[in-house]
Structure formats: C-alpha cells, structure tokens
Length: 335
Image (cartoon, rainbow, N blue to C red; front, side):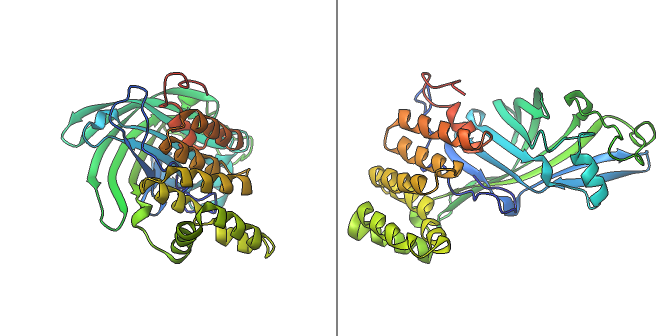
C-alpha cells in the first residue's frame, strides 16, 4: 500500500501473496497505487465565472487485478481529507472545516468497488460505494485503461488507468455553510452542487525477489546464511544502538518477507515479518505484511487475525480492508 507524497506509513508493507479467493478461482494480482505517478484532482464552478481547482495529496489504495478477466478486479481506495489543497490556505482551511468535509471528525474518504463491467475496448465501469463524512452512497466510476499490465524484468510490474466523473457533493451531507468563513456567500458563490473529478492512477506490483538495494541484499544474505534466528540476534544487537539504527535495520523487512514468499520460502517470510510486527506492534502495515506472508504459507486464519490487527490500529488500512472482503466465506463480512 502506497500513500501519496506525505510522511505517512510507507507502502510496500502489504501482502506478499496472491489472493486466495473464496471461490478458489485463479488468483488476482495485488497492485498498489504508486503515489509518484498518480493524482486526484477536482474542479468546482465558482460564481459562474471560473472554476476552483484542487487536489488531494495523500491517498492510498490496493487493487486486486485479473488480467485475463478484468471484470473480476476490485479496489479499495482511501483519501485523507486533510490533504486537500487548492493553492489558497484560507480556502483550504474552510474546506477542511465542518462547513464542508469536517476533516477533524471524518479524516478519510473511502471508495470500495463491488463489481466491474466491461463497457468497450479498454473501458470499464466500477460499481461501488463512496463514503464522504458519515454518508455512504452508490458510486459508478468510468474507468479508461491507459496502459495494460506490463511485466517488467527489473521487478516492478505496472498498469495505468484514468477516471473522469461528476459527483453530487450535496447528497453526501456536505452543508457548504459559512460559519467558519463569513466572507463566503453560499447562495451567490455556489453555482451548483456538482464537482468534477479526474483521477489518474499508476498501480504497481513489486516482485522484490528481483529487486536489489544494499539494505535488502544485506538482510537476504543474513537470512540465507543464518536463517531468521540470525536476524533476531542481529536485531537484539541493533536495538542497543538507538532508534535510528533500528529503523534502518527494519526498513527492508517487508521487501525481504515478500521476496522470501516469492522464492517459495513462506515459513521464513512469516518468521521475519512476525519479528517486524513484534518490533512495531502499532504499525498497521507491519500487521498487513505479516498477513500476506501467512496467506502465502496457507494460514488463512492467521492472515485474517493479522488483517484484523491492522484494522485495529488503522481502521482504513487499504490492504486489510480489501483483502478481508475476499478471503474464504467463513471470514467474509467479518469486518
């Protein structure tokens, strides 16, 4: 799971496994939204004279993609309302206030697809539910595939798609009042109740067994020569050197866990990522990473428990939200 540009928890801490679907159909590929090459923009008419344009800078999502049957694809998409940016600090503060999004009480927007329908070559409609503030309503997103799934030999697979739609913001209970900004005159300045959305997404799947960087290579070598027991001993040594050393040491753990699972060593992946979770029990992403390794090891009950732990820490963790609704029937709808 990757978050947009800010210092929030990093993205590569999601499942190392392909989804075990309830109907045992062929697995779908997990793809994370890549923040560097994705954007969420909006445009609202202002007094009939111009349009106010803005972006949300912090968002995350997990896509389960079936290249052979794109209609089986599903997505969970989370937007941090406090990351709204229009280029004017006074207006941004007003939009974040309870006159509009009330970002303090409702810090996220949430979209989850329920079904996908093909509309033509490269065109699809994603039927799902959008939650803004405390209102959830049906939402259909027209999706245009920009770039088909490409399997990159350097270890990062990717696809690209665009969404353009219009939203009735008033139907989500947004009051658009001026309690927090007396200058704002709703009757005069709001021409209608619609907002145009333009979303451009690059989604990626990192095959970390093919990826190399010093920290990851060092950790994989340590696992290869001494097993996860050697990693645990090394962690005990590093802890005495302070938090910065611990952070550098633990940083490659998610990638290493995914690489081990890809290499057919899920037991070692589970042991490594359990160490990460124990080291950082308040990290939802660490719990989600462990859940992915547990899925790869065939432990769906353990994966469900770890995904639930992720949601206990972060109720809108996209990986946990998306994966839990696709696990075996005994666990479906448990959240």
